[in-house]
Image (cartoon, rainbow, N blue to C red):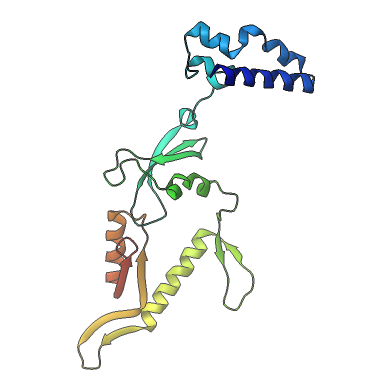
Length: 212
């Protein structure tokens, strides 16, 4: 260990000499030699404070400066692992597993652990994209306009493919033109409302990714 630190010290001296950084050279006095620090502090294995620098002493995690922590669910698969989302200045700075979750108990897969990159990705779409039939270009829509378009198509599909009776005269009161597929991040309350909505609309094809 001492030989290793000795070599590291020599490398620092050599780099300072080559770059002409004599101010840094003043900090590389024999008193600051790693072996000297180890002996003075009784850190013979170099695993304690003798290995710290002024920079490393001031380092801290992103979670320390967070303004708030929001509970969420991983958006990827159907397991529904819980997450803690750390927010600073209305921006997500860190995402980690929620140890209070009975489902995942603080664990996240590699994709879930990297979901902060999904949130802050420069390529993330933040506007509704719409391409009209036979069009070659996408156009941006505001959310209210897009929701109105979805509602109009929902109602039109239900009306155009409504079935009152089957070929034997049995009552159906259903539509095969509307179907629902829930995502993995929907909670029980949201799934309950979606199921009630589609059932009331006469849809019989209602499914969820978590069950598939």
